[in-house]
Length: 261
Image (cartoon, rainbow, N blue to C red):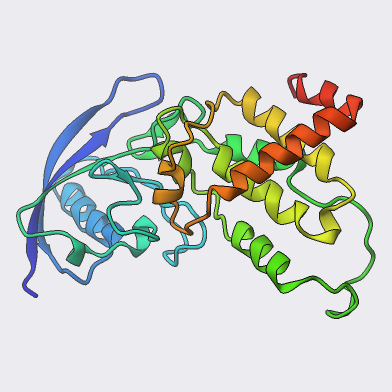
């Protein structure tokens, strides 16, 4: 395939307290084999040569496992290719002369830092509230010491595949974090190692999610549709069950769940 020329509309915002706007750019000589982030690198090289400020965006692993590449491409978190992060999205999925709009995540809990970079530390605080196993389990046991059914293990692994990118929040009209929190609660609740703290974990993580300002679940499935790891929304149902059990059976955890962390 021949190289392409693309028209870009990129969100530029100098800082969190300064209004932003969409700025037009032209991306010339773009190979269809480039990733989306490589295309942005080419655009930035051109801007730097002209003495202009480069477009700020996040990137890290370029393997679809870190969740850093958080961009809304033509109105879709991570772009039009299903089950793909932006760093794995290739330019062959676009057409020569196409206009591509590039924006950051849009959520009150993810304030813009600069241009396409947002602060997602709210997710870190949710994990710190309970997304871990803290009991002293000693050394690593033999793989067959603790038998776990294949169906349960598969469900836990599917939930643990969440990379915490925030695409689910960006896609939801209410900026809900239910899919992220549901996945993190599920993968620990399903395993015996997470059993001891399962209800306290659910209460604390949901309370922190609410404290961060995320919205309610819209129950429309946009989160599942854009998740690069295709985390199913069944995790949201499991989170609600875990949370309900925590409130109905443990009064002390009900207090934690209604108290700001």
